[in-house]
Length: 172
Image (cartoon, rainbow, N blue to C red):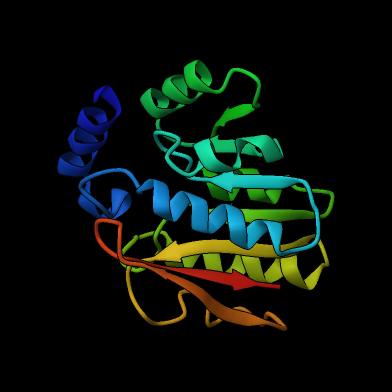
């Protein structure tokens, strides 16, 4: 319950950067895990891990967790002490990447003010061959990374049992 209260508090403070009134559902977490397992194995970075709603389902894949909010970071470190958690701006962390990786983007970019900042860095990493694949969710039906020149873009799953309902997109 503490996670949900903290999440709601953050949402009320800055709804555009949080995107939802409650953390993602277990159904969305499972759908993201399933989507990752269908891809080539890679080191994984989860951007915007928040309270760990998605992390819970992908933790066995040992993702690097990146979260800008200090309270969320503390919660992630408490709940996933075996995972490396970095309290950093996602864009700054992505600029430091120097080996191939898969990206789990746990920030629904549909209304996020940082969307336009993510597109160029994701494009650059993919163009350099560092970004192997990306799995993300969004609350809209349109392709949230349409501007990135991925070879493959597919809305893999639609999860009704999430507030709000979410689409899982897979890029490679």
